[in-house]
Image 1 (cartoon, one colour):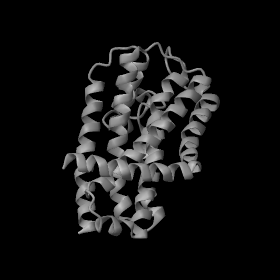
Image 2: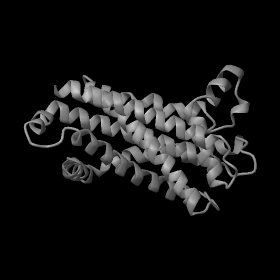
Image 3: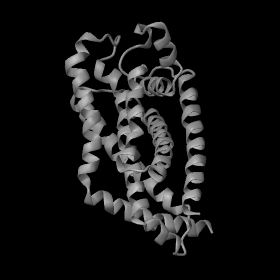
Length: 253
């Protein structure tokens, strides 16, 4: 049974990846937004923002990476919406394939596309002066956090992708996720914020994730931030997966 699920998922994953290769402009579009933000903040606002002893591009990059993921998952919701409206889900259900392979193929496609976007953003950051003395273990830890974060948000994107009434509605849910890093430690230290805003910023998931990635890049002790970040990512992943699969089963019932 497990082999059957993996095989069906691999076939449908190939189908989704082929769709991406035919619409490379979509991947480029989702990558341009975070790159444009990085250019704007580093070269326009960076001189006025105090980031301590590290360069502002080094300080900024972790938050930009999270914005990259949030931008990319909107495309997952959009693709799912199109599949729902085209009736292909009903055709899949008439075939002898594992039901769970359909959403999993979309989620893994999102993971691949987002990893490509993240690599592009890091390369641009290197051209802008980003430097890190982090070792292989630290980079693998950063990659693990970003993969968990991407999977969590992608399963969250499955829900509006399956239940939205319009294509715009399917992708619109990502807008709050894109702007959430702005009220965190991603762009400025939280101690510069007024009381209520600072309280929110310091206790929302983006801040702990950004801080953990930033400490890994700068070879600083990560403290409790990495465990808080992993707890947020895993908790959101489990909750989003459960809700997404419940929505999927209800739709195909």
